[in-house]
Length: 638
Image 1: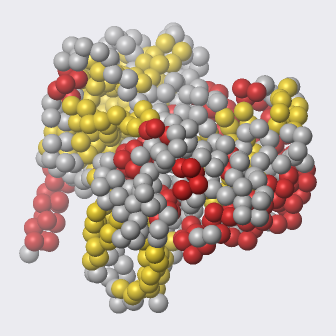
Image 2: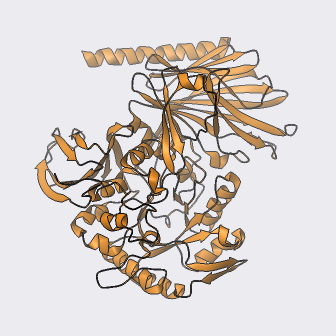
Image 3: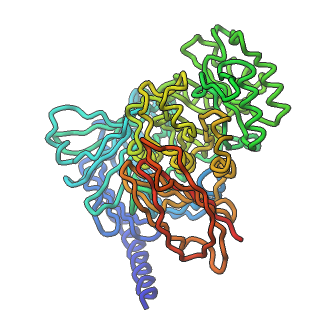
């Protein structure tokens, strides 16, 4: 009976949606309404005195009140026609958190005219979010434009947002922002926690296709009491296409991280052949410099060190070895001077013989090799990808690097607070990851379990992160046994199980593990979880537990196997995991990788235990995590 009532309500909502849409599209220019396919989201568009505004209703609650959205500042816009269309299709990403993506939405298309310029405003409404985009035709007489969008929130709403390598900001009350005397520096994505504990997020998608636009900038207008975003452009072409302005909706903070709206809004792949693009794991030399093994070998920038990494990668089935900065001592036009103790050709040949692909770092602050020459040169060296350092938030420069690396069959990983090109992994899937986050041992004083948990629920919304999780020799790192380790000793708060879980929780097309091969070999039974994990090739992803800055549980499926990772704050505690997502009538073998009762993120970080048991769908387990600790499960059918 309950199901029949629910279906009747949904049918009535759809009928009402069609009637309202038909009415407004035919007879009114003042307000137009469009619903999501499931009718839970309603977008109201208003035209008043040449200005277009919107309201967003979700589950019968007004979540964004009347807010302006425009493309030409102070230029009146007239709606000349409106139409609504529906779409329900599927597509397959080259790599991602899901193997199949459903693209289902209702789209309102407003034909507009502004100071003689004609164009369209697209408003797509999904079951879990909305997107706005402007397209203008024949803009010859326009010199500049600004994509402007307001977000009129309730006083009780609280904001969170990234702060580069530092701990993300928040919670920040809207009410306090309205009376603030100092300017707040925002960054995207903006995460909003509503008073009912539901979450929304503001960001952009498909900036890669919006030629000329800078990255979305966010500020707060204290006079109007609204948050707003803007992208500026100096118009050079005859047509103008803006990025999508995106609003995501989630029942909890974890829902935003796996929301597929930004990817669905992105331009489909521009690459005809993507067979050469392979996600995976990589070992990395940068954080291991200065580490001395039990047999007396000290890692550095030399041929023997790199061969050790390659041997380990080949043995464990790790796809890549990343050679970071200082492999070259000087850069000039068309030339690299290789470090004196490194025979790069010998390393390349050795890696090829072992079946391990190489990724090579480029630091443009050391001298400019030449961007036109760079990518074909890296390809000629036999490299499979480039880690590009110090590009910064330069949209045109970064777009060019992505396109040129793709043209030469190179993966690209961006260093140093790069452009948050949300959705780019659909358009150019060679853009494999980026350090839009705290990259482990950088800025150590900010890196706590709480910082990690906030980044996992805030920074990760914009796309894949290169966070370099997975250190095993925590005691040695805290003691100062690395040249590139923490600047302050005993400041690394984590457990080895938490480190393993973090490699799963943070989604990326390239999981970079930063410790020495010997550290992993010493805990080979624990490393097995990372070893088995099929990076970037997930069929399904779920966030089972999520609380901002407190804990997260992420479950990812590959075929019939599930990998689950949990991380908790410095208080530690219990989390409940409900296995209702498993298949019926199937018995599963579970391997647990756990903190022990004696484990502690500060005082005893390397204690762990491994055990196995069987379970079925519907089982509910309580897992125990140490302070700053973690928990992992590998689940497969018996």
